[in-house]
Image (cartoon, rainbow, N blue to C red):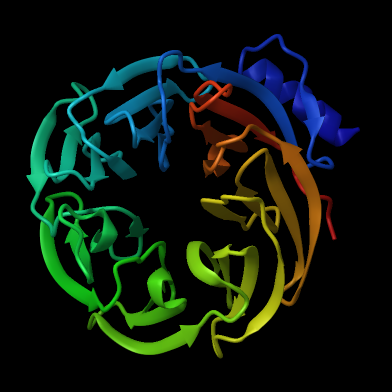
Length: 344
């Protein structure tokens, strides 16, 4: 009953008359879909301006930054001038965005009011994934490798101050494929998915030195990643095959693994509800964390083919999923209300 009341309240708050599709075993309710007519190709990652009620989506194949209303889902603007944007970090204090771009135009600083490019961050070409560390207010950006033009045999991970775009230092990896980055907030470690070597590099973020390397044994091409620092668990998705792998952050050993949706490109840990959301083709896989070592798949929430990237906005209890425009599937954004987990 409580969850039905919350779902109804979410519908009223978001100003939509559509009935929620009860999807996700009382975990997620679909509120609506915004279709982006004319957009073809993949999206990459998302970011939110909660106070300004905006959702930003990287139009990877369209070379755009797409802006939506965070509550209604209405499409507000397409910002051109990018080549292949991948990751976005929004800075509310200055109303600016840092957008990584693997094209020759380099990573951009964009004014959040005018949407004009106000600066270019000079990194190694091929900027792709980005991990933001709130404890230091620094960003770590994957550059080089297979996304550079021309392609490079090595990857450079750069630490920078997103407020100024100043490059602070680099790490180098002997591979052309490196993916997600997450940082401890209470500790000093940074975890980097060195996908081309099927490894996780554990880095001292103060010295930028690799202090450990953990092999990922449950699969290859480890990509999306999330961290439960309180319980000492690192969550990783592999692409060959698509698996969710749970690692102990003390030993690096695998404590659990499960099948993941095909082409999963986003993994989110919802600490409040002790859930994991994995977005890939056709559905969002929802897993429940019973304790640090025990997990179960709660539901497969219908989405769309090409619905590979997502963003959880805890302040609104909302999950947003970007859908690529390919074949018979129109591009767009799905909005789900996140319902609270039952008390243990």
